[in-house]
Length: 365
Image (cartoon, rainbow, N blue to C red; front, side, top):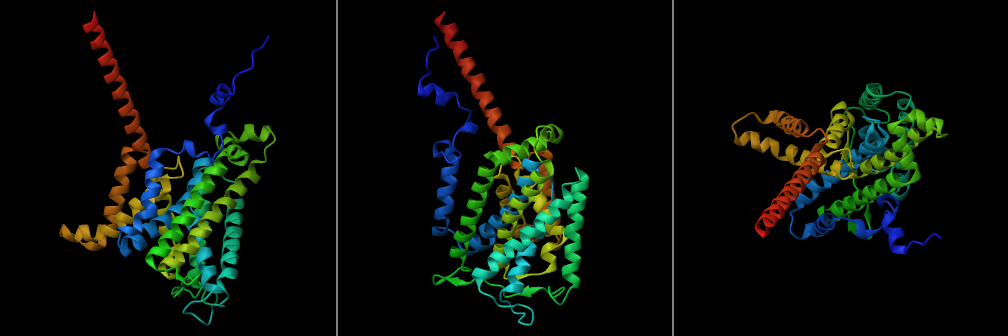
């Protein structure tokens, strides 16, 4: 006669991935510490740190997060994510208000934000529909081609995109009596959307769609044989990633107050890839780590070079060397270094504990 299992044993036998994703008991303590620090950061940080360092890092982290979702969970390296963000930024300038009154329509913020995001998502979905029919290096090349094509189109079109100059004075609205471009309100605004995007990626990665996407990443033929529509899943992944990138684009144009073709050129598109790779594409927190490293290097590299008596315009070289060092020591980025350090520390602890047990056993004998 079978003996019924106790509820406690049943719960203990359930894999971690089958537990509710929102179970706060599964959140590591370090996440709580980082979350508290981010919430109270304005109490002891300057406006420059809040606006130019963390504001910029959180936005670039969101855009890189969209790339990480495609590459990490879908096996699709896309260089069009910065372009998707740029489309949303341009739509904010075209349908909203800017210094270019001859082009900007001047609609209200609650109308232009959904329109900008929807148009950017449509653009990203169409780009994905073209890219998913290729694999490997060909996916990278076709998304890079789309990014380059949009850059040249925006730079040469003066009727809609105002050509090389782009748009300036694209500012966030005053809602609830708050100037959302002030350092502290803007920091909390970007922190809210970055946290929401992070949680959304975690949730989707554990959902049936996310698990199917990871299965397609590992073995698309077997998933197709099981009845999954591989192409539809990949296109849907581009749609989801485009939503995150589009929100990042809205915040980016509010941060800079302007949008021009230089923001959607090939250089920034590759920077997003570098940010995701340096931080690590194995976990959604990686892009944010890479973004902080990128922003800090880009902000202070010029001053470091000048202090060393070198030409300040070579700051890109210092940034490149920093990224090269990280990738050289860890192909999995900073998260890979952290994981190796934890494994090494755990191995040392086990060896130390074993040595103590042996010594105690010897003394007892």
